[in-house]
Length: 110
Length: 115
Image 1: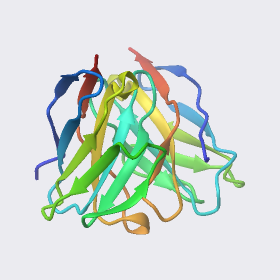
Image 2: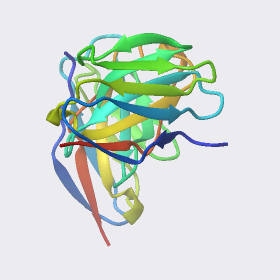
Image 3: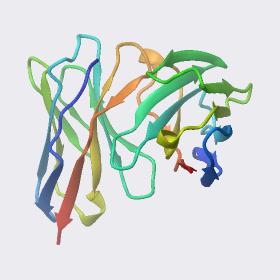
């Protein structure tokens, strides 16, 4: 089964960029890379997704390695509200099945 | 626009009982996915319904079953509850299935405790 590997936790200072890494060495050619985040007592919230090319949106950027075996979520300026568990996820082929990793707990210090 | 809602918020059952969890999709969404999230773990995909038909299933036994109604709301049923079924159950809705959708919108979840 496809899976993702992330560090358990990371720390950042407020207003600084954050790079959250993810390994997905078993990814197949049709799997999409998604990132969601989950705040305490809430359901996960979509952040960004991509297939092969780097992607930018209002929340973050997604950098995907050329071989697609790893990716990095970039928060350009962390705020206290960005403290959450960030999940790197594979969406399996042309399905809605999301395979979540264990997630990275991001702490943002003022 | 109303988001995804789930009921009940919390539920306590005993081993062997049956439980039904409910989910109302975001307006206009025709696809519902269910996930189980054990404490400290990432969510695990249970199954997805698209236009009232099951459209993919994860590694869960048949005692986990579901329904999607014509208004696209959904139910998750779990029979013969086991202690390991204690978890947060998340419902997510989206528009379309497979390549036609971009993001899933999650509800706040139902916390099930099995004693």
